[in-house]
Image (cartoon, helix red, strand yellow):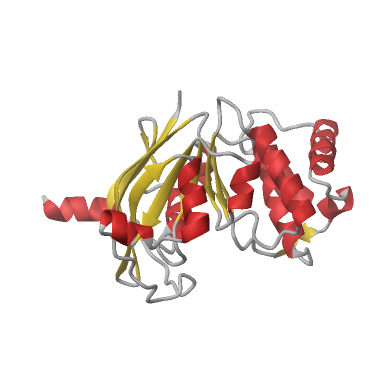
Length: 275
C-alpha cells in the first residue's frame, strides 16, 4: 500500500511562515477532507505537496513511500503519482486541451498512446462529466466558464490516473447539476489504489463524496482529526468551538495567499547549516 508521508513541514512565503509543522500520512484507499478557515494554509499545503516553486520549504519532508520528493519539481512529483486539481485553473492560450492531455499521458508511458485509444478515452471521460468533446480542441481553459474549468481539472485527473489526487475547492463556482456530475465522477474514481485529499467549505460536497477521515487546519497546523461528524459540526457552528473545547485561538489572515514571490526548496540548505 502506497503512502503520502508529510513530516514536520514548515513553509514560508516572503519570509512569513505559513505552515508551522504539518504531520500527515495518507494511504491508498482513503478520502481525506481538509477543513479550516480561509488563509490558514490549506491551499498552501496542497500546492507545496505538488511542488509549486513560489513556496519555500524551510524544514520537513514530503515522501511517497521511501521516495523523498521534497526538492523535486512538479513533473517528477506527478510521475510519482501526485495530481493537483487547482482552485483557479490557469488559461494557457495556444496549448490545445487534447494535445496537453495526450502529452501528459505519454510522459507516463514507455510507448505512446495510439490516437484511437486516446480519443476513445477522452470521449468516454468527457461524457461522464457532461462536457462537449469540442472543448478538447480549444486552448487549455481559454474562454471556459468557471464550471468548465473545474470539470476540465477532473477530466485531467481521470485521464492521468494518479495515486494521490489533491482537489482544491473543486466544487467552488459550480451549480447544483455540475456539482452532482463532479461528485459522481469522484465517487467512481474512489478505489483501493487511490487516495484523495479534498478541500471544500461546503458540507454538501462531502455528503456526495463521503470522506473516510476529516482533518482541520488552523494557523498552519493540523489541530484536529475525526470523522464525518466533524464536518457536520463545523457546518452548523463554525470553528469557534475549537477555542472553547480545545483552547485553540484562530489567528486572522494577515496577507493574501496570492501575493507570493518565487521561492526555493530550502530544506536541505537548512539541514546543512544546522550541522
